[in-house]
Length: 79
Image (tube, rainbow, N blue to C red; front, side, top):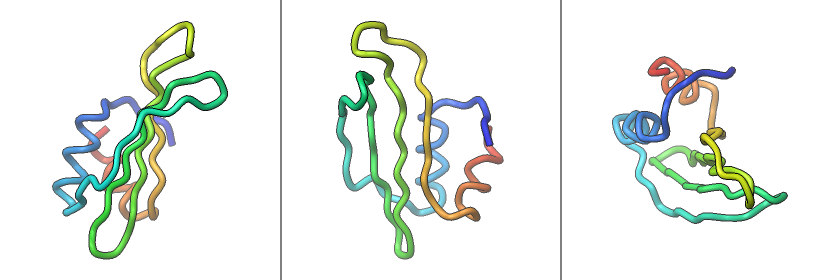
């Protein structure tokens, strides 16, 4: 479900839910830059990817979050 919020707000909510960032990287895939982060807590792993833009034309980020539906719903409430 799309919503409008920034990555910092999502990361703050993950910390509030006892997640810790364990890995971070900037990657190029399909001609686009992405900043990917992995967060973990005792029971699950969440990945957060924000699109930094095309290799040639940078633009506003698109954020993708992969996690279980309960965690996603808690994060979605902040948007």
